[in-house]
Image (cartoon, rainbow, N blue to C red; front, top):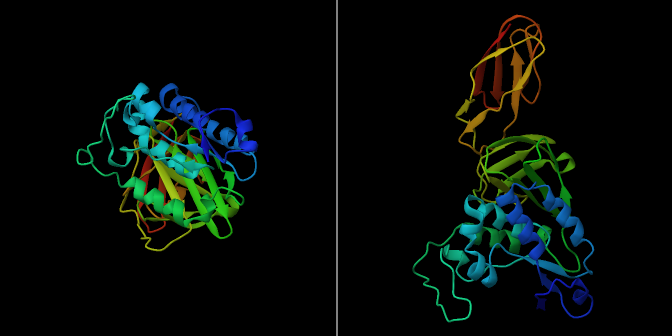
Length: 313
């Protein structure tokens, strides 16, 4: 049974689900006010206080929001799919509002009959894939035996990363909570391994620490079910700067971009031709040591490389 009220005490005796208005407010704040995506981890901690066997129902749109505040595209813009991913993968139950599955781009009348033109939209491929993920992974279960939640450390607060797991089933989500490209490192620790992107079917190798560049509002939804997964190797590495000038003691980080953007293994081996001039860390941070010139090379596992010319003054 479902209720609308924010009175959580009603979950104690009569209801098993409540509307997740708190998450909806958090998503709006992250997208429209620049709030930290790390707030989503804090939200999950509050869900642990719900009575056993109950859960919140998560949504990016519903009749109230659509009619009074606008469609999901009006409210979330380019982040609409990223927010939909959260409604499916954070602990809770996802809601699909009529018309959402065809990308309905108009507000429906609240008090009058306002039929949806099912031929007037374009079916959105993300929802069948998320539905299949939800149905087939016990890691996303709610109820008496829900999947567990674990937040991953990331090198930047712009990136939200977490795992849901139960038994051998695992779902990992890595999401850029900003409109700008990020080049974060995700610490998966003991949940490292091979996964499959449930949206693109690309195999993704999560190492204990993994470099995962993401476009603005980009995301990876990874499952331990590898069936149908395909290996993708990089054909090219690029960077915004191929020639760098530094002063002694100065540091800067290089964030290579893969072509294609999503590859199976993002591991990069870094080296400097002149460590007495410039050193380079395992995550691509260059540090100027002494005057001179050097070549810094970033090499992918299949041999594709990127060469940076460095001058230290």
